[in-house]
Length: 79
Length: 140
Figure 1 (cartoon, chains in turn orange, cyan):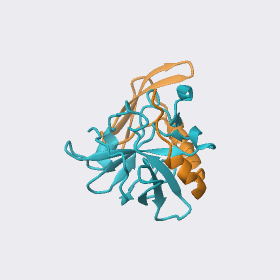
Figure 2 (figure 1 turned 90 degrees about the vertical axis):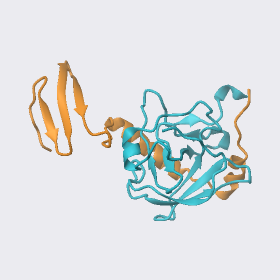
Figure 3 (figure 1 turned 45 degrees about the vertical axis):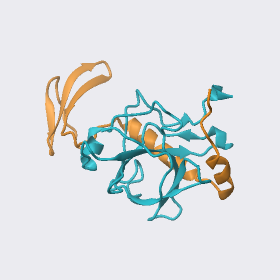
Figure 4 (figure 1 turned 180 degrees about the vertical axis):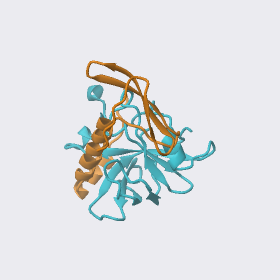
């Protein structure tokens, strides 16, 4: 892991037009400003972890054929 | 970019160049309609891994108000234009009983209907959840 020390309002620049700036440090919280091209996805790690788990759970729950009919008949409840 | 969505899922092949979140190798899929003729559900079967499949649903049937904006990174990845016809698919975690199944509205699949290319969007966790019951708990 590359370790860099930065002060408030200092940045690191990552190839690909990405700049990460330390905006504020308060206790154990750090506010970061991230400038990146629109094509670059920026996400909190825990959100990706949550989606990873959701995807794996959904794959693991791939239903047996007998479930198919029951699920296929599922419709929204009206009212 | 907004999504006019068909309710009935037509069989076709889909390519997810970036895979799914946490499953980057899951790239090539076949979407099959699933259930009886009127079923809104589909089966997204991996063509790379026969043991990998997902139940999906066009979310607007169960969630009429669900119309998220497609994130910029997905627009770029799929090279979507303003006039591109897209559809959303929500991955379903099948429950036991099936009435307890949930849909992932945090990470919908965005499908370019013309090319069959698709990507899993990562929406705002402040606005969307990964396990939303298909049937509202209070619905009877």
